[in-house]
Picture: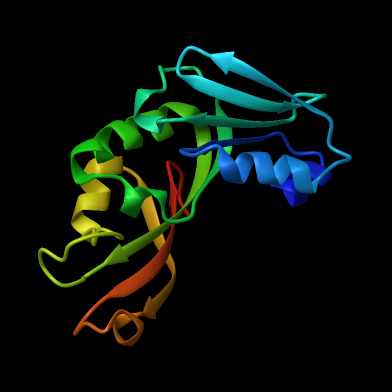
Length: 166
């Protein structure tokens, strides 16, 4: 987040727990900030408001509350969300993405059927159905993580999604 902020970008994050957000701002003591209550949680804001991190349950964020962005980055949140909440999560993400967006998505897939715990294995078909079949999707990288999870099959893939040709 800091790297993007230091290059002049506006950065908005959503975190389910407060501790890493507090630690981020404590480790960047030069980044003056405020903490404000919002109806669905808290928001940590840099003094210039170009860096905002919401602490909340992302599935409870009202439409339009995060603004609209050209790019999004999901590093494992989608696979950590309960399957029953995933569509709510996707709806919040899609609402926050503007036209001509790019969305980076990390997903675990093709894992053992009915494996307990996190991360949830999500099929590529499910991604398309939940994010929208009209989206363009490009596989950027795939890593076989079966050995480290001690299972027969499990993959970690990185996708780029967009409403435009990739």
